[in-house]
Length: 176
Image (tube, rainbow, N blue to C red; front, side, top):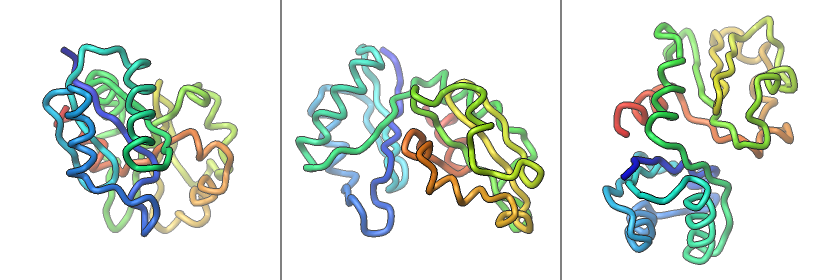
């Protein structure tokens, strides 16, 4: 049995694509996954299964669309992947009044080291690293606008990533 986390992209953001976590949990349990639990209201769901990640991606996506009547991009990561990514975050990178750190979990289509060069950012104002499966960035709050990190949302690449803040990423690694 392998522990997985499904990262659902774009649910419960403002009033868009509302998904009740209890209903989502029930869906995963109906697929006979065990140890199902959710974290926050933003599409993080833990579960155990003997099924491969590729099959899980397809199965969850299909059943989600049938249950909620809309499609969402999702990533399924196993416990070791989530931990490896969280462990790559420099210990002094955090979210506080002076800095902001986020992790963009990458879909396979853009999961390569040179992806950083394709982002519409100003590298002189941001620290950014690639690890297989994610890019991690840290920016001083005073340089946030100068870094142009907010322009990622308008980029075509944004559709192939799902972003979590550093606190959530670290929690997901400990919880899984």
